Image (cartoon, rainbow over all chains, first blue to last red; front, side, top):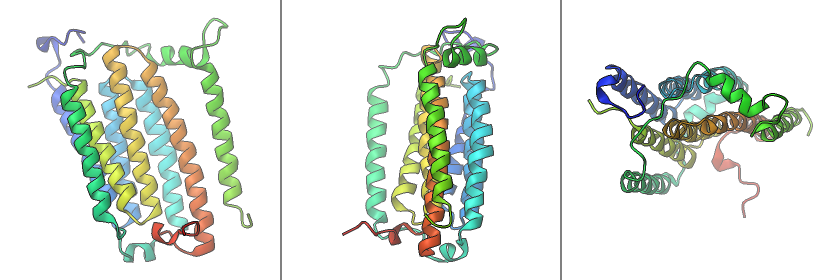
Amino acid sequence: MNPAMNPSSLPVGTPYFFYVLAGLAIAGGVLVITRRNAVHSALALIVTLLAVSGLYLMLYAPFVAGVQIIVYAGGIMVLFLFVIMLVNIDRAAKDRQFNRMWPVGLAAACVLLALFVSAIVKGKTLFPDRMMSLPESSNTQQIASMLYGEAGKMGQYTFAFEIASLLLLVAILGAVIMTRKKI
Amino acid sequence: MVPITTFHYLVVAAALFVLGVIGVLTRRNVVIVLMSIELILNAVNLNLVAFSRMWGNLNGQVFAIFIVVDAAAEAAVGLGILIAFFRNKETINVDEIDLLKW
């Protein structure tokens, strides 16, 4: 794509794809927080995750889109569905779904939304009105060289990457210890 | 039709973030509260990737991958705590998890 966003050079269908994916993501989000049955919420969350991964593809980030599908829609959602199966949702589905303070929570969230809207509208001119084109074919390679380094040198994020692996190890140990019969 | 800019992605991400916050603040089911946290993390990721596109460098995408790692760790530990709690108190309502409250 042309970095200067020349409208005549853009593919015609792109805005429609964006609006469809954004609508799917937001509709899925609304369903997640309103459904009574937790399994329905999980299925709606999968719709949202897939739509967001489509938005990543539109932003020239194919590797992040793949990670989103494999790790989120594949791994984390299976974990959620397993836990829903283990805990007793029949009772929770019959209960009241929203806590007693829900008007306060909703008001606080609306204040947050107003803050976001005002920040986005006032700061709209601060954003440069451009979209750089990122090379799609070497995206994964470039991310890998930032994470792992190249030519024997440490990359910019190699240390953070190792710390992240340590974090995952601690999380695995924590989850295993937490779910043992006797803590 | 208006070409899609970073601004459009920011609006979508803000909407997803607020939906997640509403879920965390109002729902009683712990599983759905954890799902709302995933929504929030997704909104942040969308912002990072959109800004990475805007500036034309990949730091935002690398940060998005780190956030996915964090989300996986958080979901594993949170659901582990949930199972331990369910085994002890037979409930998954946030209201009834109040042992540390005055």
